[in-house]
Image (cartoon, rainbow, N blue to C red; front, side, top):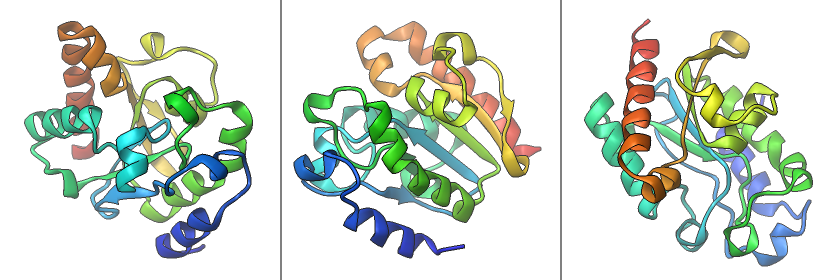
Length: 185
């Protein structure tokens, strides 16, 4: 199996879909690949495309704060990646063909990182990893077995919490506590 550095190099050279023509840079991952905890979002936004790291904008700041408060981890103590590695124009949702062109990078990241727990952030990551069409509102609130003994804990995307406020943040906190318990098992 390839190392994360080789997977990242392949991702940075990728031109398999039209997003390659509009990206500033590939947004591969950030954080500690040996922590046992991985977060997966959908696609980079503007700030991420400019800085080359996932979840560095307002959504990332909220995620980092909630993880610090609920799991006691700093932003460099867990691994964060996205299903799609390039920013869709105008922050639109990733298209099925973009996910299809990019998913092997995430699959390789999961294989190399070998997390015990993956927290999926929002619909796209949750639907992709659980191979379902169900939405995040129905799926969150419990955990799901995944390959190689990995447990998936779905939660809302932090941008939903920024838009909707308190109730969504409370649900995210509950899901992060669920992830913390899964890590302790």
